[in-house]
Image (cartoon, rainbow, N blue to C red; front, side, top):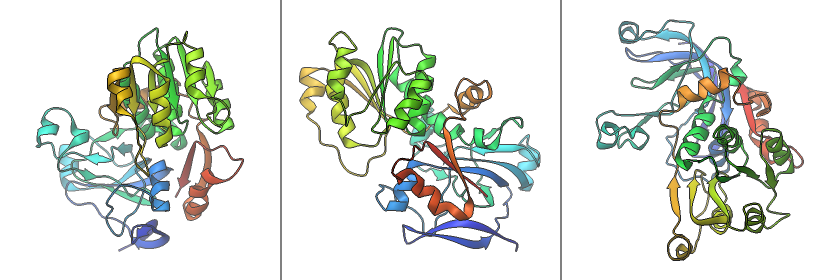
Length: 343
């Protein structure tokens, strides 16, 4: 068997670059050569050990990626309209297609899901049943790695149900938040506000269409939002920072009968006063998870230039420098949105 380089996580959080066997496809599987892979905030949480998931051991990270088909199983060749050399990506969750949730179109909540991960490597095996998407050959690998996080951004904005007159806050301007800001702008809200503690990210948000940007270390965000909305508060608050404090801020900043979309991943529990949700404001809370039925839109938005990918891809590293790539987000004075690994 030939070998390849891969970043392997052992014992839950020990990351190492190793030589492992290159995957071979089973009858219903596909092997791609990875062109580029993204680093998600979830990957950084795994690296730090502060995450809520049960992971296999060993584990190869990487669920944001694009690659070219190099091998296909016999059944794939018979059943799928795919050819070697085509560029594809696949959704992280592989639905069973038989459970109660899958039958109702809620495959992101599948009771018996598989996963398609492992792109921090030279090659990736896409399992049977994966939801595969073709990627236009004209798009740069660095561009289309954003398909997965942008799909999550789109789902967050869909859950927000933004109307023309709304004041919308996007809190947390990482890759999903910056994507949500740009997709929310496509909905033409009355006022669009970006919130983050990184002034560099706030500057980029302004360039991407935010009407106002707020740094919670410098201003009282709820007061500032009320001043920008005739004293009412915002109609929509999209929380993608992963900070429990941001949830509290959002409950305060929302108007009565407003809506909060919670799309972050949290390393600790948030404590909130639910009297604000019920008795005092009658708020709507919507949790967001993954990116159901949004990949095609993400590909379209990237291909048509409706989302600025170049400003979002801030750093690229070779696969062997994965530790530097993970840590770039934590360097003082460095503004980072999406960091890529190039095998």
